[in-house]
Image 1 (cartoon, rainbow, N blue to C red):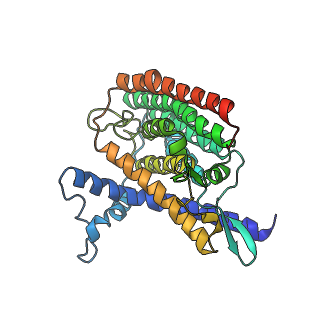
Image 2: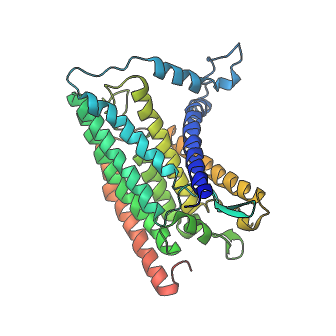
Length: 355
């Protein structure tokens, strides 16, 4: 392999991981401030450096210092190896998903055409879903390794929830992927160029509106965020990470944000045109500015989906567990199957893949 291309790939993966980790830290501040605005409060504003509070932006830094310096406690009856491995499994595999997201198309530099997708995978969607599914193991492992019946029940509850909604998650994506005729995320974004009926962007949200709503609902449940935070629910439920402290606890917290970023990236790539800019051929813009515009467009769309998920988090009350499973198996699953069946028949009767 060309050493330059190998170095470029390593750089892209490192930048994707840095993007995810920094955005996850920033989301900690956004969550506090957005909830404060919705509840008519000031929100985080106490942490300061030399008297400067910067609208509470120093709070994520204070959180990191607090978590890094807290004592790492392992229950006497717990399994020390699995206790340490569980948060690493959950966070590590979520971070891998970031490398498959298509941040842009191509960047022309010094006569070279460089891909802006960290890892060019012909089955990127399968890779992301596979990596996310491993997170279930981390949840169950955390509950088992804690040596607590309550934490184990929280882990089993989390596994049941995540597996239930992963089925709907995959089925909602199948409809869009059937239209694009590919499992390659980059190619799926390219398929969304142009317009529909002469004025609408040819994005998945207009081709598959029902799938987009179902996907966002399943994504909110997959990330275990309110109103689907039954595996955690600190106020009245013993969660799977009840026996965790310090940076291990922080890794589970960061993992929830990373999963939100990954699923928002999937939503942007498959339903919102990815790096495409409405009514503009982003791939034809002069380089290197065209590449920067593509990355900016993709990042903005990811941010918009994250904002929407945050709005839902602070709007709806928590479901009971029976309600959560009923919603997944009795409502979302049949609707996603109906949407897929309608899409398959529509493509069969009126057009081919990518048409």
